[in-house]
Image 1 (cartoon, one colour):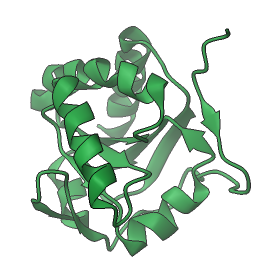
Image 2: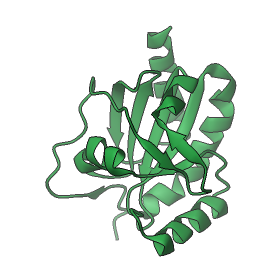
Image 3: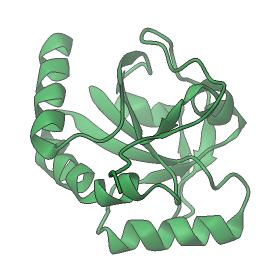
Image 4: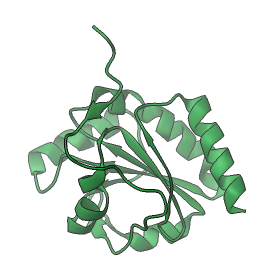
Length: 163
């Protein structure tokens, strides 16, 4: 069987570069409060949108963890956003287990109504990665998986453009 690196969803038009994500007030899988002010804590935020049913998303999590560690001191933060947990504690527990087994230390956000409307509504499949500046402006959107080398090169390019 062919390796499925991307699971399309019908309907949405996709996230647009230049759009701003703001005003969310939610929590992460560990129960910590997280709101949109988190974006101001880094020059570049890598928002990794995944689903508990998306094998490629889970397979690439260790890459995101490595990226998170490598770029933490360079003004970059990685945040996960779980796409399929909305208000479902069983799913949330499953997502916690997946993240723990992947060795992930970066926060994985649960969607609130704002993230649902501003982000998830327009996601055409998982994994989708959204690169945001400190004000929440979408700089780049990539769909599907990438290897660590490609991801690092993209982060370097975007960081260079922000300085």
